[in-house]
Image 1 (tube, one colour):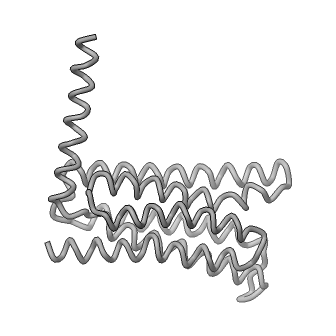
Image 2 (cartoon, rainbow, N blue to C red; image 1 turned 135 degrees about the vertical axis):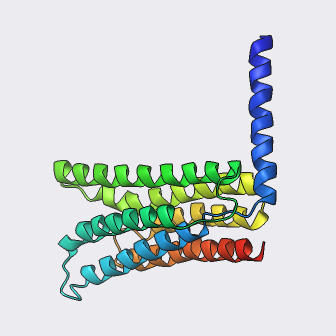
Length: 204
């Protein structure tokens, strides 16, 4: 019992240290969020065009559009990680957030492939209808962790916005406008907060 209490206290102290470090150290995930938001919002706009058979695209191209976006995103993340040197990136809070957002990206890629399999197996678009809401829900979870570590109130607003956006996207399912709404939400919940973080980092 004493050993368990000691371990629990160590975990609490570790989380407190992360939170205090996150409050004092500028967050360095801004550029990654900007790139991710731009890549996938652009893909969503192309998907909307495909639903209208515009730009030489057909609805069957939507899967390939997002698959290509994931490949572009993966390459961009690798370039940023290998070439972008940021002050404070090695801090405990920024390393933790890097792992959180990296895990989120892996989860989204896995769910995307699972949706492809489910759609092929059951010939049912329900998996695709759920996918945008799931992505925004995962964004909300990642922003919630970011808010807890950084203790910045505005980040909580982004997290709550992501959760609300997931519900909004669900309400717009089976409508071509869902892709435009998804693109707009990615700009609002990824690109804009990323720009704010980059500006705060530069000011710090």
